[in-house]
Image (cartoon, rainbow, N blue to C red; front, side, top):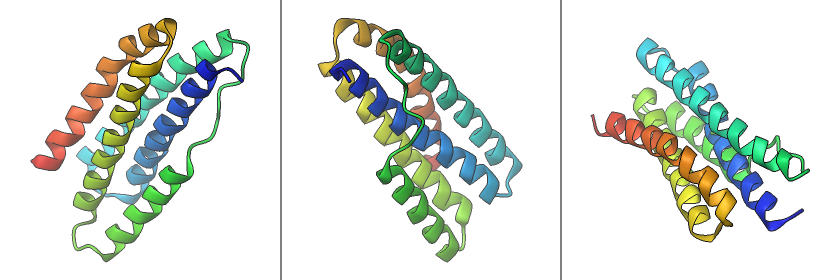
Length: 142
């Protein structure tokens, strides 16, 4: 597997963690507005995963279909905190915002080290990543 493919698959796995976390939070919370937000954010993650997967496939490699151990641990941590919290929705929002921080940081790191063709792809997807990050940051601060 080439460095380019490894880098893209790592990003896909991190974004998939976020997608799965939003889907999980959607199932755990009762607030309809927050449920709609989780659906929207999971869909945004799906679109980014698809864009990166096309590039992996174009390099004659297989896009990863898994997440990361860190992502699974974060989700379990959020569940535990939500169970112990009197306001589980606030707990999920805070943890989802941290997931957005992780995704944004991974994208920024990749932008610095990626080959030019991957940088171009990431530059196209970066506004979506930043928009999702900003949306969760604003919600957490509200």
